[in-house]
Image (cartoon, rainbow, N blue to C red; front, side, top):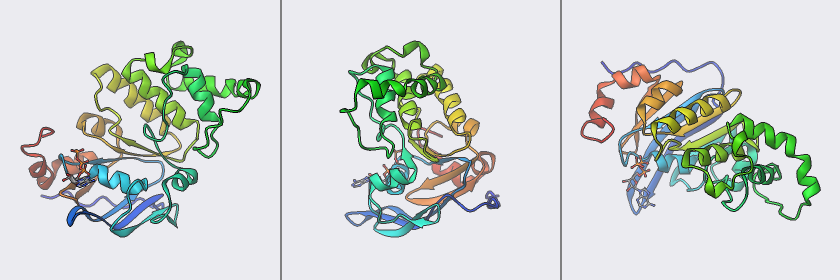
Length: 259
Ligand SMILES: Nc1ncnc2c1ncn2[C@@H]1O[C@H](COP(=O)(O)OP(=O)(O)OP(=O)(O)O)[C@@H](O)[C@H]1O
């Protein structure tokens, strides 16, 4: 039996796509995707390799322009809005946008991030005195991501999982209502996966999170709602138990490395 569609939560979606389509040289990588992300949820986008997850993610964050379809954020049409303006509105993509400066310490990276009220203008010209006023907030954020003992470590010297935690801290500095993660667990060992999962759960409190994730254990553990893509189209949408029991989903994953 295919999974019954999940009843829509009563609130309005905070992020919503209709008929989202992206063609690359005539090939439809994403084809007519309708997606609703509800406030306060952790929502995963999953699917076998080549399903179109990253393309959808890039469309939603405006790194790519759709061939067709619309995207609304908090009721506002952002289909033609530039990525920088989307970030300013509060839809912030972690890891890519929150670049970490390898030659700066953890503390200085977070201080710099706190100097970007709109998420983009890195104001290096600010005096050290001004930056110091931000120390209390920076310390809070560093503590929140479990990096207090690494405060004076150069970001470039951090182990991989810790670097990701720092990237989350620099994203949190913008205090975005919606955080998007593209494969946050990629390349991580078990210990880091546990730590970053717990961190995402913690930062998701009071926010909305949308993530592309290959690790289905992480998805089942962390996500309230799951959208499954296959060949550019939505195959299923619901909670993890429902979509993982859906034979169409099982079939789509068969033979893939994530089965
Ligand atoms: N810039 C591009 N030009 C041409 N084809 C592309 C481009 N980006 C993606 N595609 C194609 O679109 C399809 C979907 O790719 P996408 O990267 O979105 O899938 P994915 O689900 O994120 O896959 P993976 O799990 O392997 O990361 C693939 O067939 C890919 O080759």
